[in-house]
Image (cartoon, rainbow, N blue to C red; front, top):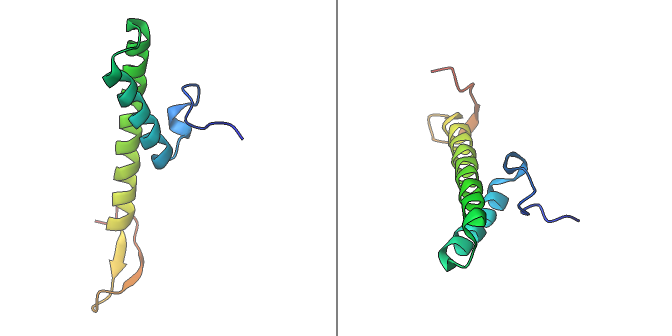
Amino acid sequence: MTDTTSPETPVEELSFEQAMRALETVVDQLERGDVALDASIALYERGAALKKRCEDELKRAEEKVAAITLDAKGAPTGTQPLDAG
């Protein structure tokens, strides 16, 4: 099995959890300050992409939760299309 959080793995292929772990690794490396300038720039760029991936996945999850419909007693009855205002 391959390491799905390696720097070669495209960010868009990572799950939320994988992206969070990868972002934590990037932050740790940058905070240590023992990375060469070129590598720091690449890490920062990957970190920015990972942050966006996490934000996008959270937004998608929030939209799914918001689309859950409830009955009069507050019990979930299903979902509705997101654009069904």
